[in-house]
Length: 163
Image (cartoon, rainbow, N blue to C red; front, top):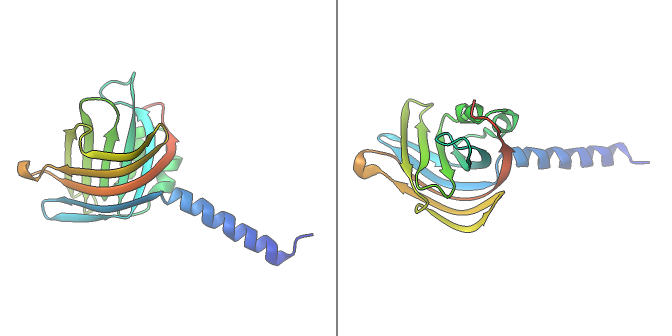
């Protein structure tokens, strides 16, 4: 029979592992827009319908200064996960020519959204449920945002609807 000490130890390990899974995989970097700046400390990867063409799917990367993993995991629609982001960036990844991204900083007081293509991504792993690499978006010449991040992300959630 397991002692109470062993049961508590196993429970603590399980809780720590579960919390780490929700806290995001590995991400670091910075996000800037105008006077706002955010440090990337967490990252998550989700799959959902492309908002421009719902018959297609995209992988969306969330990069944040705060842990929103539990909120993203609990969501039933892509828009719910988007609404969890208050300080960070959301960037779509797919084979589409136009990839949407949005930056929200200072509790959403500063916002910027734009488009890019696959060029800002330098991936060392590109699997259906796992992306590893770097991201560099620089729209500062157009008074836009700048996102620099490295990440190692596995799929956290799959959404079938945008709303």
